[in-house]
Length: 100
Image 1 (tube, helix red, strand yellow):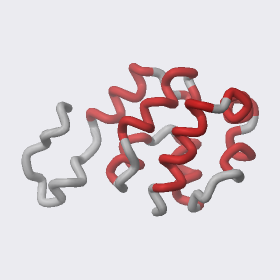
Image 2: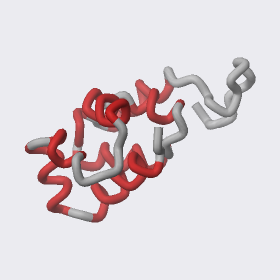
Image 3: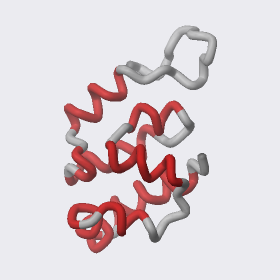
Image 4: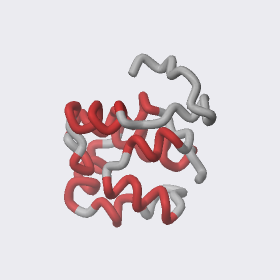
């Protein structure tokens, strides 16, 4: 996973109105402009923010997608999915310190 591509996608969605409109109308086509792996595209299209975060994407940048309900993500959906995420900083199941 490139992580950079996911973070860039989220940041661009925040700052570029045209990109947001394209994500709403044709998310798969909008993703072609970014250096995303097939797995990243699949996870983004599914709105699987927990899996993206577990793989190192920024939870803060992923949360930008909720501002415009992009990819089916509302604040409630995002929060619910992130609460179920495993903390990648503790692969052996240690204590989560991310505030979840």
